[in-house]
Length: 390
Image (cartoon, rainbow, N blue to C red; front, side):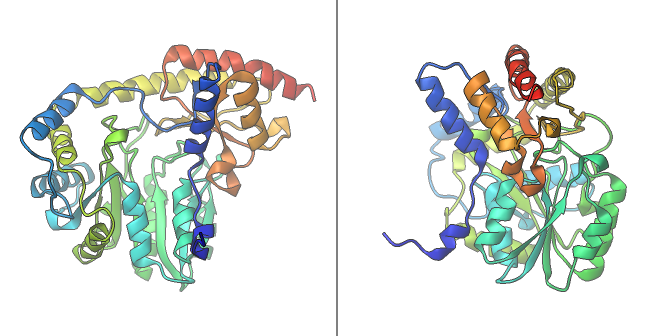
């Protein structure tokens, strides 16, 4: 079967590839510690599951509006207004099956052949994948450990050009756990507003912030009308498999994104949206407890990694990943990740899974139990000791 040439430009998400390989090893009898997948190991809170059951029993199994149920869009608008301090109308909200469609639809709607998109690197791999797929030109901004994995703002200003059609920011960040501070976001916002460039603000890890304040770029002058805010339920409410996300954007763009929903998924599952409504309006204690537990695990893992030979690890301020520096091993990060999986039974991701500027690093998710994190550290030590002897 002949496949269209554009498919060669579409990338993938390595976490799922490594997960599949790890599962295959488990089927062969190996015991694997999973630090590769960005998925909370907590169960979806009971009141959310109960809301979904009631919705199913009540017949919420039919098509709904392509932009999302009115009651959920109203709740999201209220939630975003309260958490970002900006007014939001339900007409500016589009609900999607997971948050990834907001990335895909935004880039598809705004970026044409040869248009440039500025994005973080290392960063979530779907950014670069979709930019390439639509024929855009990826313009990476390296996130450097020496800068706390923040934007190199001088380089950013040099790389903004008349062909820049979109700027992507992600804070807290995947894979580094870095957080863009107020001064960095203000400078990005000033340039974007002055040049009329839209910004896709990926804030899916907003609630996973352990130190400092969360700042959204939407609140800066001129940004309310040119920001596409991406968020969802997967991380905060441990609802990865439910597939429920949303975007908040200017109404004119929301109409285009809704048409892309019509032409792709039709709508997001109705009973899932009602579960999301219960998540937003219900008890938030489960979120608070999960974040506190992740902070404890972060500290455990960072301290353990810094005791391994050839490894240094900065303490991330957000998300639930660490991004340890393994440059002292003098080995490609992909090779080290391969050895950890095959020799130690620890599934991790090479930093290059998130872009060329991730070389020399690994990404480990601490969305796993304390016992498994300690086991992973014990298993990794012989591998790094072996690498240190070479």
